Amino acid sequence: MVSQSKWVSRLVGQRATPTALESLRRELTADSALNWAYLVMVVGSCLIATFGLLANSAAVIIGAMLIAPLMLPIRGTAFGILDANKYLIRRGLVSLVVGTLLAIVISSTIGRITGLATFGSEVVARSQPNLLDLGVAVTAGALAGFAAVDAKLSSSFAGVAIAVALMPPLCVVGLWLSRGEWLLALGATLLYSTNLCGITLACMITFVVKGYAPLRQARRPILITLGFTALLLFPLGASTLQLVRQNQLEASLKSALLDRTITFQRLSLVDMTVNWLSTPPEVFLTVQAAEPILPRQVQLLEDFVAEEMGRPFTLHFLVSPLEHVTRETEPPETWYDNPTLFP
Image 1 (cartoon, rainbow, N blue to C red):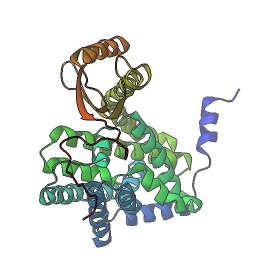
Image 2 (image 1 turned 45 degrees about the vertical axis):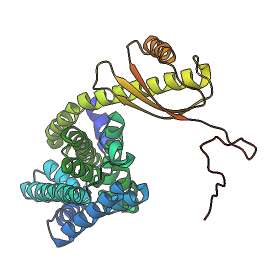
Image 3 (image 1 turned 180 degrees about the vertical axis):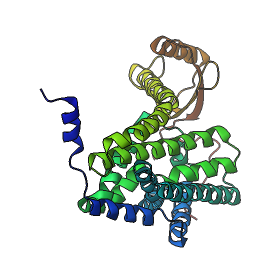
């Protein structure tokens, strides 16, 4: 039987040569520098991400992810902690903090200037992180670490940056702060913190596995970083549980309205939102109906949902009429005598 120490040694692999170690140290030190090139990348990435979020354009947001300036000081800080290199740690943290604050200030300023009444789905989606986001961050962080020590994977760095997306959550924080939405800004901050801890932890483990830091020296900083990451499991787990309940509720309502049709006839579900903060939770259903919806029908559906979900819900129907019109349809009296589609 192979002993535990031998198994760990096989997993970690050979120690990197002093030349390779020094080369990585110089590269990460240079990448973690707070200079004009880094600041230009931060400002450019922030502007692209903020405008993409305001336009609700996923393609533009992906363009901001490709720049990924914040990934560089995170990798440098992770290696500096393992290497007990105070200079590299300080250098990476200063660049990271300056870049983070600069992105929040810029996005918040743009949010105040534009003054949009509502934000699109791209902003809202980054305000509700869950455990899936932590999984993405850890995986992307591991790949980012491998890309730093393996030239064959360096070409994949752009894809890693897109996967973990550090800049858009920061811009979402600034946008929500510009409107005074502290709770939603906190949610986006949680997403950024999740990505930050996940990348740092995964980079540390990757550097150890590739032999750039001895396991004995790396054990304590890895455990500390793992502890900080574990603290995020509580809010992320609660958000994931709410996401599961939301999906269950949507499935129950769609089944009732579209499949089982509990006293509902010729009804089309357009949109559904849930306010989980109210007691009981309120569900707002935007529907198109060919016939009026009666309070008795709403009560029957509330009873059905309460039985399916194990808790009561208050349903609100926002109804728009559904009318089938053809060229043979008789016009109502309110129509003009000679309607035209084009001038």
